[in-house]
Image (tube, rainbow, N blue to C red; front, side, top):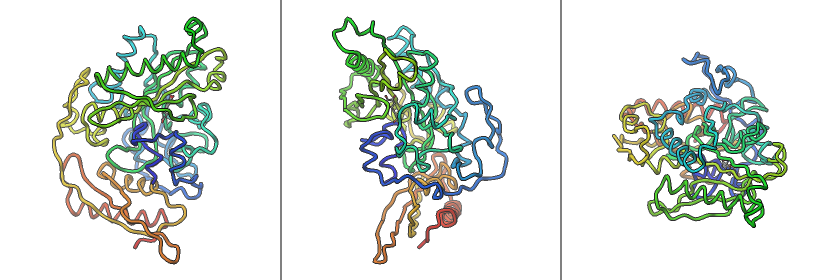
Amino acid sequence: MAAAFAHHILLSKPSSSFFFTKTLAKSNHGFTAFVSVIRRHKSTQPIAASLLELGGVQISKQDVVKDEPTNNVPDLIFTKLGLQLHRRDNHPLGILKNAIHEYFDSNYNSQFLKFDDLCPIVTTKQNFDDVLVPADHVSRSYNDTYYIDADTVLRCHTSAHQAELLRKGYTNFLVTGDVYRRDSIDSTHYPVFHQMEGVRVFSPNDWNDSGKDGTSYAADDLKACLEGLARHLFGAVEMRWVDTYFPFTNPSFELEIYFQEKWLEVLGCGVMEQEILKRGGKTDNVAWAFGLGLERLAMVLFDIPDIRLFWSTDKRFTSQFTKGQLGIKFKPFSKYPPCYKDMSFWINDSFTENNLCEIVRGVAGDLAEEVVLIDNFTNKKGMTSHCYRITYRSMERSLTDEEINELQWNVRDQVQRQMNVELR
Ligand code: DAH
């Protein structure tokens, strides 16, 4: 399933991350051939804020959404650029970011520099090469990442800024930002979400007297730092470390905490690959790095049941959160009825679930709650049929039958035309 690999909130799937090898093995994603990228419906209508400022860079819609085969950014994604939920002090993501900053400020004497306004448009070099993501890694595919052109993407992780900040000479820093991934549709996945990256660089003076080598010293410091952070956010919880793989760290770990009767992945981290430091001009140093998904943690900390709520402007959502208050539990203001619509079609070789989900989001926006494969079979002629169930539900109001039928009709039409599948 698409979701097995392209999970959203960093480490948001119970046991896998965007950058794990094990998810590569599990994934059925091939590398989506260029030609199989679906053509999106791009509206020609000007949108309200057509000139944005992102991290000091002026960006217009035409810079991001282009009707060219090397571009797969839909209109909907453009509308999210520049919203920067993590910079709103009264928003759960801003409250969480501030709480993490507070932890670092008080434990590290404000040594960590904080960046939360770096432009999300980065080069493939920044997003992949600089952090040693292999040339054939699935995260580079057009099925998984939003490309503006062949060399430019919407960052798919905040690790995209590690190398440039090291090159600029920073040695202790936190980077928070919106990140973008093509993905499935359900309550924990949204194509835009937020991450925080942390990096700390050590020099031989730091570890020489410790009796440890640089790598063990950094790994121990990293673990102590992140265990402290988890306690700062979650209280006295049980924790465990799990060995894992990331292209940018070695060794690599995941921190899990036992919370509400489940082991929950909190973040990914490790000792930075020496090559990254070397390229940043730091040959004698050792560093640690971590990355965490803000939505994933905020959903647990604030009891937020659906990831779409973070984007809600409904007062019944926004008014429940207050600057500086991490402990507040969200009180659902409604549970409007869901509506289920099934659609079946014969797939072709270029079919991917992410492409389907992109069409559904393009038509229904945040009214699309979930898309699940409910039936899958291959007939004697070797043709494969998929049946997907789409759940439509608004967080804010009841939907009418006519409205849902119109959405479904539109989805069917666009799926047929853009994906060249045969509806059944
Ligand atoms: N970039 C990783 C992701 O998005 C998260 C991550 C893992 C960041 C380990 C790190 C790290 O800096 O050391 O899945």
